[in-house]
Image (cartoon, rainbow, N blue to C red):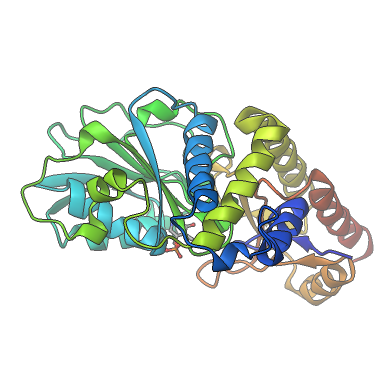
Length: 354
Ligand SMILES: *Cc1c(COP(=O)(O)O)cnc(C)c1O
């Protein structure tokens, strides 16, 4: 039986997507060829790329609003570099809410001045800073919407007079937001969209062209837009599988439908964490993520038993990140409410028997 997969990334994909992707590895579109062995310039693959780009824009409610979607390589980490390379002329504002923001800051400093408007590093990132102000005249403001490692998620976004750039790697397509507030969104596919190997970039075209430095073609958003995300050979399998997930999500009813499911999953696990004296949440309650629930066990002696019970229940990938310890339940779109139910049952069973 398939495990209940709580892995943080690469992570769970819908079972039917895995099945369709496997089929296409052997015979894609009844071409009697694999999706891995046809030209990326072929009609069949160009259609994949176009549909994946369209669904991305549509699912975020950005159709007709001046945005372009790209499927690039190099992971979200490459976007730490590309965002600054393409947009940072003088000064940019960064909100530091975790390891990934911190890494984005480090890359941006190569290109210009970084104003860290606030940081939650003082408490090992267990909350989202509030009440900070983004100074006027910044080239852009950068934030991480979901902090995959620590389990916080931004619910509010500051008022700005500059573009907003967001790393949405671990909560893209998970909740309704006014996505038109963002001018550049990026997300490594391997958390909530597809396999590792591609990164979705959604960009409002009018923010480009404002820096004076020359930009190498491979790192230039404008080039990738001009070439319809086919400047060079794209990672065809990662893009195709991402498309299958986007189709799956559309058929389910889109972002608002999956948000309802995600809210139910989050409510279920956090109620157990709050009621069960053997567990405590890692982050401030108001900043809890619906995607990444981090918690510790209060009685270390019960840990071995809990780990055994998890294994017996077929639960996988629940270990916390090494910088936090404890446990982390990554509850991406493809994880069912039933899987969270199985985990919660194990937690309450532990309380009854520990
Ligand atoms: C995983 C993750 C990254 C790093 O992604 P790569 O694709 O490995 O570069 C960056 N930001 C966030 C929020 C992540 O969850």
